[in-house]
Structure formats: structure tokens, C-alpha cells
Length: 116
Image (cartoon, rainbow, N blue to C red; front, side, top):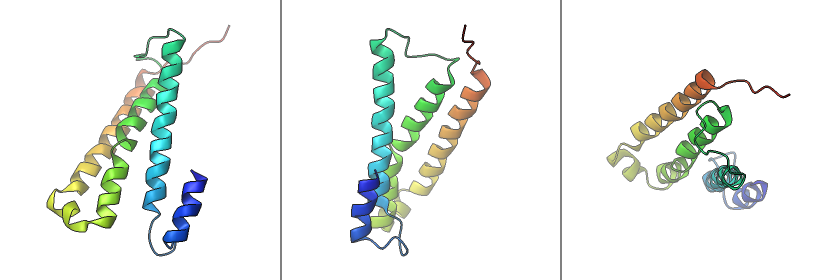
């Protein structure tokens, strides 16, 4: 991800604009890491849907947000007319609400694990 920011800084001035391509790369790296987490759970024969596991809810919220966010963010910076025409700001706000709602559900349903 750091490499993405360094390369992106060569083509964009980070003081003038956000490094949205690097942010997109970082977002998809995060989604990939969550996919590896779910793959590891599946390989260890764990149930993927664990409603009392906080990590499950955090992972679901991150995948929900960061799989769509970079696309919307890049559209907002590269083609503002599409951003305005389709009301992507409202969609982005809805994604943020969904992400935080899933985190809240995770904190409310999560249980502390006892290590014996």
C-alpha cells in the first residue's frame, strides 16, 4: 500500500488533491486481507457466520464499505458530472451508515472470549 502511495505521489500532488488511486489500491488490499481471513476460517472448519464474534462484524462492515467506496471516490474526483447526476454522495453516506451500523451490531452482539 505504501508503494501505491509513493507511486501515486509521483503523478499527483498530495498537497493539492487526495491520492485517490492509492486509496483505491489500499482499499482493495484491505478487502483482500479480509477475504484471506474468511478463507482461513473456512479452512479451519469454523463457521463463517459467527454472530457473537466481533471480528466477523468488523470484517463484514469493512468489506461492505471498502469494496464499493474506491469506485465512488474515484468517480467523484475524475468525473464530477456523473457524481452529481447519479447522486453518489447520498449513496456514499448510506454506505457509511451501513458500515457503522454493522460495527455497532458487532459491538452489541460480541462476546468476550474466555481463554482457558
